[in-house]
Amino acid sequence: MDARDQPQAEPQKGQKEDLPKGAFPEEFRAQLDLLMRLRRDVRRFRRDPVDEAVLARCLSAIQLAPSVGLSEPWRILRIDSDAARDAALKNFQTANAEALAGYSGEQASLYAGLKLSGMQEAPVQLAIYCDDETNQGHGLGAATMPEMRRYSVVTAITLFWLALRGEGLGLGWVSVLDPDQLSRDLQAPEGWQLIGYFCIGWPEKTSETPELELKGWESRQADLPIETR
Image (cartoon, one colour):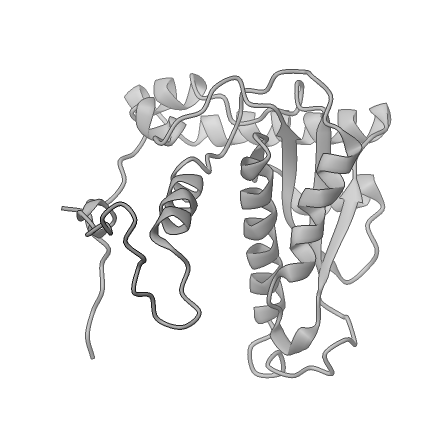
């Protein structure tokens, strides 16, 4: 049985939980677990606009993320113009066709049937980068492991993702792209490394099951692999 599915003892009605200092109540933890379960990589969006105040509230979660050396290396480009969106979409379509050519047989048929981008529907689109050359943080923790800056950006994206889901919004992470070409098309500054292209909007539906699993592309592992040394 998945550890997340283990039954938890609940306090009786009117009984106060005996919580360790700093712990959150069971009801909160259950809601947090549900939020994480419903955090899907969304490809199918409605075209309804996203309220700017709601988007700003979700983006503010990025500033709550941990970052190596307090470097805050995340950099965000909002993709609004038709020219920028067309360039990004063309990039995806080219990369997607090349990826399809790398499969054969049943797997090629499965891949061809996957929807891997919501770029034609999502009302909000962002390209999120890592500034590998930032001086903020004075190199602490990044001198030995410079990739930690990029991991910091991924952590920030995860918080943003959960904040969006809490508002009923969805996020789709597009990685079938030529990152160098996209950076040239978007005129991203030198030293910025693309982490992902993100589609944001109202999902057509919600599910606890990844679409790739529903489509038969792959299955999740039943247990978390942990090795001991």
